Amino acid sequence: MIYHGNRFTLRKGISPEDRDAAFESLRNQGRTIPSVRSYTVGPDIGGEYEYGAVFVLADLAGYEEYMNHPAHLHTDRIGLPLVDVFVSFDITDDPDPEVGAKIAEIHRRRYEALPDIAALVSGLGEYTGSAAPGETDRGAASGTAE
Image (cartoon, rainbow, N blue to C red):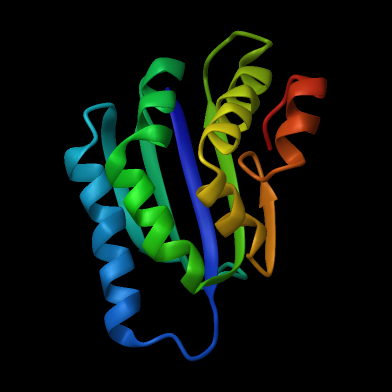
């Protein structure tokens, strides 16, 4: 299993309507992407971020489907412009020592194929973790995902 998570803080001045639309889009990912086994979206309790989301995926094929599914891309397009600070992470019980490099490669291909998504990510105030450009290169080199 792969638990793909995001923790984030929104930019100041975001309207409640825009925030709610982005959160509904995140929830829609969980409802409509076939590879999602379960999910949660909501406040990040006890952390340094305002909100978070976690999506549970069975394997790397499901992870790649999730990352490139139209529902996920819609969330990226309407949600990333609202975000200031963002971190992504992946937790897995996959015994493959190359799983981190494989996750990084999924993100590298995604950013290469979808320059509009790569540009939105570049516009974030701060982005770290397993899906961050530059971080994916490091993950591929070290064989780990953050």
